[in-house]
Length: 435
Ligand SMILES: *Cc1c(COP(=O)(O)O)cnc(C)c1O
Image (cartoon, rainbow, N blue to C red; front, side, top):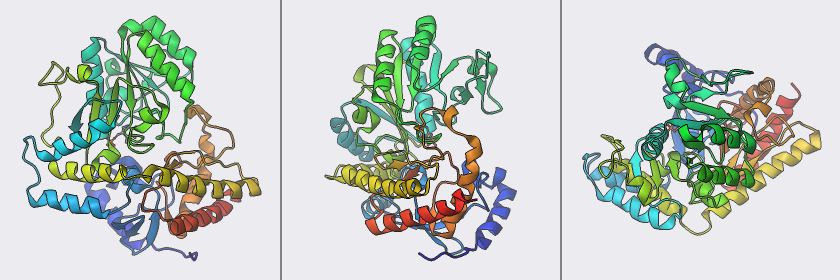
């Protein structure tokens, strides 16, 4: 791949226009490229592991729409099934055979959930799971962890207060104090802190929610022993454990992180991959817990476009493909090879860089230490990422536009493309680390 100075003229012009219509020109903040160089790319087309912007530049895509596209862009099986669904109509607001097929495929092959409810986004899944946990336990407080993201749910847009502040503070305007007080925030990896909190406030706590593979604030891989301790403590104090598997679900294996670590959560939330590139979220649990959801039980939750046939078709095709033998092993092998190539380059040049990874998720950390908590990330080092991101675009590689975001490898990333991308990443790091 030859170095070239790419033009973003068309993207820049469209972004200027978009800013007249949409707040910040976008519909989700990170898309605005605020923490990297230049205007956001307007993408016109995706094929396999490549995307093309409106200026005609092509990139190897490691963002993959933030995770849903584990099969890459325009996978034939997914496309075919979407078209088949569309032929018969796009929405009926009734039960259909599409959602039934997903249930029939999914539940017998998943040891950790017995029933599932489809919604339209990851945020909606988490919001509904919290209501369910509160409805089942009759308690109201929620424990979350610093460095885990659970969508833009009011009561979860909360981070730990500094110093002696007992309560958390909201990370968005528009969230009432009263909601913030319902949320307790703890550092990841600290069993004692959780135990103390459950001991003293367990009688008020409905659930503990965690990303078992925290991948929204760097990749903060936890020890299995820690996750096991979280499980044990929740059981001991009669608090429900929610695994937010919106990223890790169907990504670190068909059974997600629950399967990967062999830990049984009480409720699991899904999003991203389960919709195969269409807007789908879901929450699942045991028959007993799901029996509380309306119309079976008293916890109300509904959706006009829930289990939309077209979205279900995309999810169904994606899950079917993921069940083909060897898919996850191959993804993991490719990711291992890609990251170890780049790691070797960094080590040889003495760069303070490491590439934590799990299954087909990787992160570029500007540190050699193992990072397991949000407060171990040095925000100052994100200047390196700015340069890195820019230099990668010059070399035809697209990463999510923030150093706190992880990268994803799909089944469409071939060995050759990964070798090319690894080489481009090494050369972009040469520039970034000497700046
Ligand atoms: C992406 C994500 C969400 C939010 O999902 P949306 O579909 O963006 O609403 C929630 N939890 C986790 C762990 C996520 O990665």
